[in-house]
Image 1: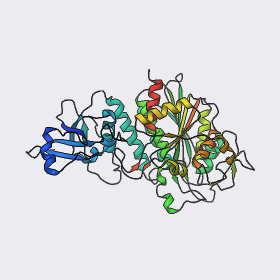
Image 2: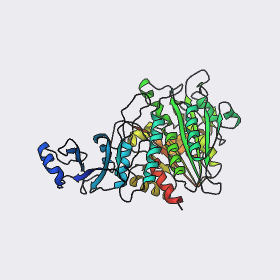
Image 3: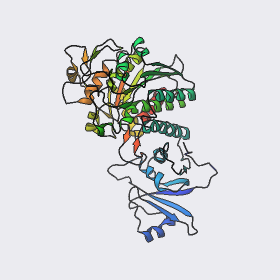
Image 4: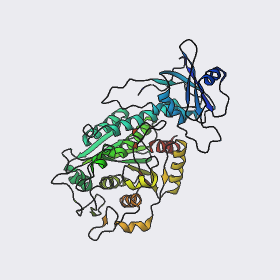
Length: 454
């Protein structure tokens, strides 16, 4: 990750934040008039100094009277500015989020294609915690890299390696259960989903922190590629399935932030890492499998594999009765139909937790929207031959019924929340380049900081 902040003694070029209708700095007025520049939101004007250098930069903001404001608008500067060191001046609504947006907007995935680095550094604004911003950026870059890496280079084993590298950075412990050992250790659903692939499925379990601290458990869906199984996806549906481990990436990023901040919690990260493939031993529609929880599960569609992996992983985490248990998963297309790619639904029965998390989501510009665990829809998961069918019997409320299915595997956790994320930016937005995205992790990190920071 390139440096975010300019050194205290480093000369910096001003970036003047100016809303539409406001007077431009005197140093920029003549050049703006000559070029016809108007300070529209997101507009950027490089002002020369007359000697071939850069005197400053005018950046258009939305202004206090705008009907809707994007706290990440400053992220446009990541691509608009030449390499160098800058300081922000003017009416900046939230200097921390502006700094974060510029840093996040500078992300590039360059594993397979050389990209010319362009290092932009920002003078530390007053009141901004440099360590906190750097943790958030590093964790987000890590998660984005994992999502963007194609499945030929990121399978279940490689995902486990990423978790082990995370553990090594922070002195955490990691164990894993791999392949047919999943049956011996009572993870039948994880095994069923991943057994058709030559890349062995696994449960990866990270622990960090003192045993007497409050237990916080993170669970991530790590489906490294999803063909749909025997209910095979069309080609167009498979194009982005390298991102089906985006829930695991988000929880890995969150774990990075929690451990980096040294929060006084007993952190546990559980990832079910599999590839949903097709072969002669692939699980089938209509099959019935036991689960770690003891519930028998009828398979309604092999393309709804993620909730099966999560079911066993959640049951494992629930056995310790954590104070908070959160899972994240790229789980349903229904969530995208309801809320689009940018706004993941949040499900929980804990109203206080929901209110706190939504407050932090707004403050961090890491948006979430609460949807209901609507109990009457639980009947849609009924099965005539098993305790539960893992998909609903109709076309409605797919995200809600998926959350209701997962809830059946959680009894002891004081608070459980489920996040149905997309983990992808279909097009570039300020602070959010096109490609893999880490959703909900910064909001959750802020909530955990508030609750557990001593």
